[in-house]
Length: 191
Image 1 (tube, rainbow, N blue to C red):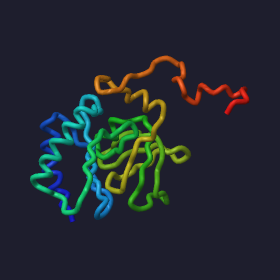
Image 2 (image 1 turned 45 degrees about the vertical axis):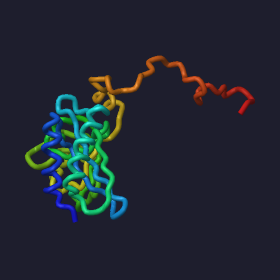
Image 3 (image 1 turned 180 degrees about the vertical axis):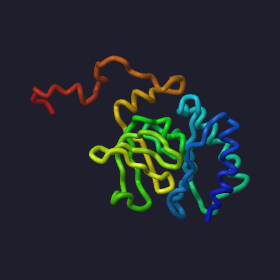
Image 4 (image 1 turned 90 degrees about the vertical axis):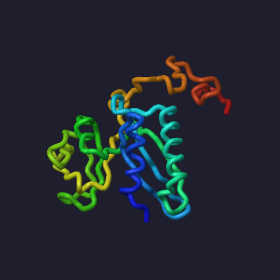
């Protein structure tokens, strides 16, 4: 069994030294197929470019090669939290107010195992979620087994990259790419 506190003690200083914020550390899978997933972000942008991601992965990999904190074989996965990010820290609930969320609960709350709605914010040790047809529901953070933003156009617009230096080229025109599915004329007899 892996000691989660010892694992965090190795990861947190490296993340902080790079000026990043740790979003989540999760060991998934079983023997032979375990994955150590580490999500981090730049606190100023909420993003993590691929170059910084690779650098963090190399630094952590070097430390894990020396210390070997996980008994079984595992794959190391370092990433940004993505657009439809997990909400893992109390301040996430205020940072992402007005966005759609899905919450999984450890036990039913008012007869619900899942809650979907709009984030209203944090109230002490509970998130307030406005659920259609039910109003505001107070969800204790300790009662959640997971929470994740829902991918919407509004969320996409709110999370557009501020720094495009690590991004691939972006095509701005509306013309389809040559050879794309959009090149096919639906009125033709050709397949």
